[in-house]
Length: 240
Image (cartoon, rainbow, N blue to C red):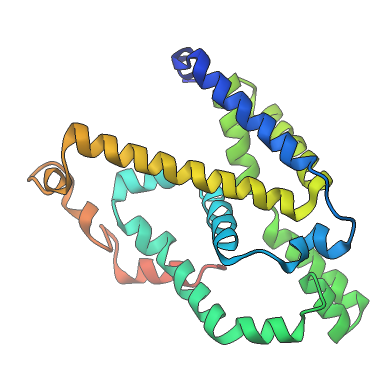
């Protein structure tokens, strides 16, 4: 698989890939302000479009096997993997965001809030749990898999390489560097989605093609697919 993919790459493909990596490094070493607020939370100055773009890019970056799940099961992938996130994000935005903002506007992290409300031991325990919850294992695996496919590196070497590369630009540029990268990735993702959708429409036809008998398994266009309501509800209880 690796060799076939590498052989299909032309010079222009490798050039685009190289430009992308160069952009990551340039953004990472961009001159930054020295205040803690600028480094950790980008000075709380992200506008709504940038905030949405960075959330979308981050969320999609942690999804493993979604292409396969959609291919095998259809739009139930949205019901189970998309809808719960949006529901709880809306609940948080309407009922909790203002309270969190007013109660912790001067703090940066959950452990900071625990230290202010309780003590340093509680904050340390909270930091451990926050780290375990936020540990980017899925992101590391995905980035390592991409490097493995592109360059043929063993996966156990590709994953540490992905970590080192990411840490370089984030450590140097702080959260704002990550935001800039996410905005670029957001643009690339949706440009890719749009291109694929246009090519499929132009080459294969529109939605009517999918509705032809035998073209797709019947469950692919069902919100629950081959699963029952209980299966979908389990996803709503996942730690979003």
